[in-house]
Every structure is written in C-alpha cells, then in structure tokens.
Image (cartoon, rainbow, N blue to C red; front, side, top):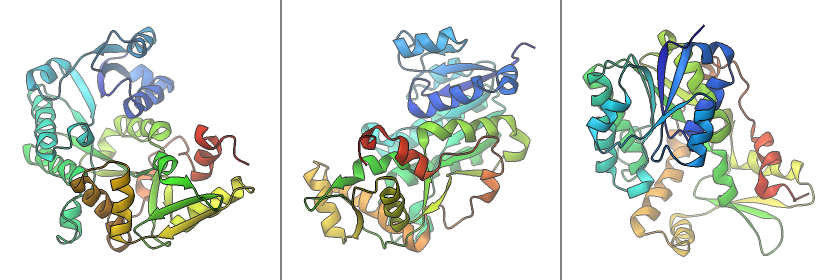
Length: 314
C-alpha cells in the first residue's frame, strides 16, 4: 500500500519534529497511511539528508512568510506545527507566525492542523500572573485557529523532564538541589519532549475524528518536587538530593546570575509560581489523553536513569 496522505511536520530535524517523524516511520500502519514532508530551515544539512534517505520529503519553510507556508502545505492532509517564542522573545511576533500557519493551512485546504500550544495563564489566573508570554501567545494562536474554522486539534506539552537537567545543580554541601518558587507538593505534569512528542502526535494524526477540536495533554503523570527528589535518590543512592522552596526575589536572582534580562526573570518566575494554585493544565486529568496512546510514555524514573548528564552518578 502506498502512502496517500501528506503529513507536514515542522522542525523535522529538531527534537519535537524528529520525535514525530520517528514515531510515524516506526509504525507500519501510520507509515503506510502518511507520507511525511519535513519542514526544516536547511534541507541540505546532514540531518535532513538522513531523513530523506528514510523517505521523508524535506523542504524549507518560513513561518514569517505565509506564501512560503502555502507552498509547504500544498496537497497536505495534516500538519503538525510549532512556534518558538524563545527564538526572538517577542509574543506579538509569535502570534503573527501562528496566524500565518493557520491562514496558510486554511487556504490550502488542510484537513487536520495539529498545533502545539499551552494554556492562557493570564486568563486561567484571573490576571494574577500576566507575564507568561510564551504560554499566552500560543493560547491566543489557538483562539485564532478556532475562530477561522479550520479542522484542528491542540497538542499541549507538559513540563519538560529535560528542564531538570539544568534546574538541578550540585550543592556545595554535596548532592543535588532543586530550588523553585513553589511548594514541595506542587503537582507538575512531566513530559519527555524528545522521547514522547511523537507518541502523542502520531495518536492524534491517526485518530483525527476522535481528537478534532480537543486539547491533548501530553504528559506521563503528575509528580511533585518532593517526588522528583525521592526518585532521584532511589536511582542515585550515593547522591543526596533535596528540594528548596524559594521566594520570588531569590529565584529571580538565580536567573539574573545566568544573564537573563529582567522581563524574562519575571516571566519564568510566574511560569513556576502559577502551577500550585491554578495547575499547569488548569488541574485537568491526563486520563483521556493518555488513553489515546498505543506506546507507553516515558516515566520520570526512566528519564533520570537514562539522562547522559547523570549517567556517571551512583
């Protein structure tokens, strides 16, 4: 059976897009149903060439140029699209990029736009935390997609497990410390972006009728900072590990030492602080989203055990 539907995947050589391509190509049924068109900045780079050898059609696409996107979406059935606030740290630009994607998809007759988005933190918190731009801008794109009537579903990634690799640091007293502006019992929906994006998106593209119009919450489960430390200590029994709840000024001080500008310090503080009272996903259950999967998602224990950063720790 030859593939009849074109599935456009943004960021084909990156972690999220690469995960989607890997999952689709690794599933005989999905690989038979969909022909992948991978969008990348440079189709001539080695990673893109490696994908081409696996049958992926690699082409360039510019999210700042709607006509470029229309060319990329020509004859496509489905599209997995992501935007990157952190590249320019401009939420108005990200919103426009999302509108370009949505408009191009509608004009080209795309039958299923899978957009990577997040919650509207300002709305969720009643304005208490109005500066989490990289969440809110994606939520505004989702609102726009809904407003123009294109068939779409919404992939909502949880808190990246890989964040722990930079957030957990060796303590002068020994062991590792995780210091965040939240209580130790805050539920966090942990997600392995590189390992599991494809598992969720493949399920979404294969089960279009079941997911249209819905938010799919991509995370393995809810774990607290206390849980993270206990898991780490079990896997690395010779290493101590503790969580410290810090205030706003202390957390911003950490970010300032890392060279982050003041508005980013405020944004990342609010990103952490809203989770306990309001929930990363608005305190929604993961059960319906997890039920879509035909592959098991990565557990936090598996991620820690296999992380290259901690592989030599005992």
